[in-house]
Image 1 (spheres, rainbow, N blue to C red):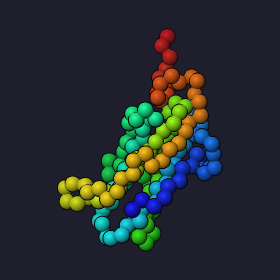
Image 2: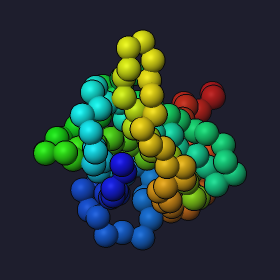
Image 3: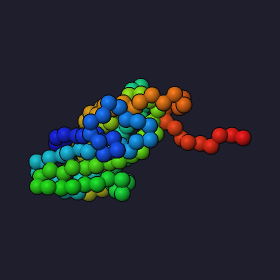
Image 4: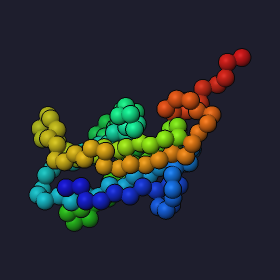
Amino acid sequence: MIVDFELLSNGVASFRAFKYGSVIDVFVKFRFIDGSGPVTFGFNIYSDANVKLFGSNSHLNPERFVLHEAGGETCCRFRFANVLAGGHYFIDVGVSVHDGDRYRPLQTRRRMIHFSVEPTPWCSGIADLSLPAAR
């Protein structure tokens, strides 16, 4: 069961909106009722227009996730550099168990986390790809 979450901006928990270029840490705490087996944590980021921008999970990209287990609780952290344009965004989180050759969802929370990015007048799209200017 998903218990709690916290967002940090460059290691600070108290902020109004993320700044462009800041490091975003998302911590999600899970409590497991039974011995479920190998667990996979995943997330998706959506724009406020419901456009999926990015998603990953601890099976596909284990180096992006830090898991800390204590008793029946696990805290998962994922981190990314904020290159999103100013606006509002949402994060889905979910946890599943590896059951043989397939994954069985234990819980998914849609649009569980809302966050804002400060205005970025130089960026006219959804994200700044930092492409070099044409000459």
